[in-house]
Image (tube, rainbow, N blue to C red; front, side, top):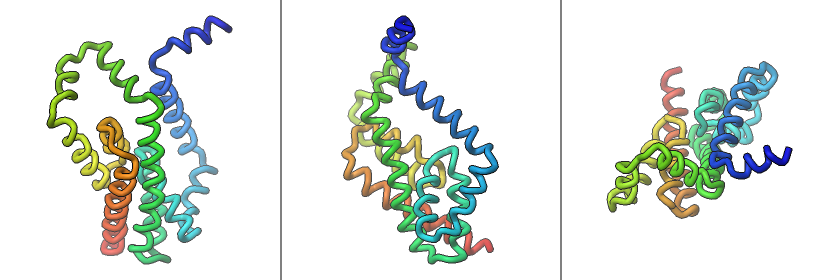
Length: 189
C-alpha cells in the first residue's frame, strides 16, 4: 500500500485524472433514468429551476439538460428574468471551472504535459506579448456563444485574469447568451 501512495504522490497528472474520473461519473449519472427525470423536472421550480439550469448550461455534458430546463421555464417566466437568474447560476458554474483551473494546479499539469511531449513552439507562443490579451478575448467569445464554456473559461484562467473581472464578464456574457437562446425559443414556438 505504501508503494501505491508513493507512486500517487509522484504522479504529475492528479488533477487531469480527477477530471477524467468526474467526466466518467457524469456520463453514468446522465444515463440514469432517475437522475434525468429529476433534472428535467427542475423547470417546474421557477426561479430555482432557472438558477440550476444556468449552472448546467455551462458544461459540455449538461448543456442539453440546462437548455431543456430553460426552455421549459419560458412558459412561466419572462425571458429577462430567466436570463438574469440563470446568468447567476452560469457564473457559479463557470467560477467552479475557473477556480479549478487556477488553484488546483491543472494549468501546471497541462504545461508539464506539453513540455513532456516537446512543444517549443507552444512555449514560444505563450510568452509573446499578443498572447496575454488574445486568450481572454477568445475565451469571452466562446462564453458568449452557445458553445459550452469550459474552453473559454480555461483560456481566461490560463491568462491569469482577476477573479472579480472574470465574474463580471462571465455574468454579462452568459446572461446575454441565455437571453438570446430563450428568446429564440419563443420565436420558434
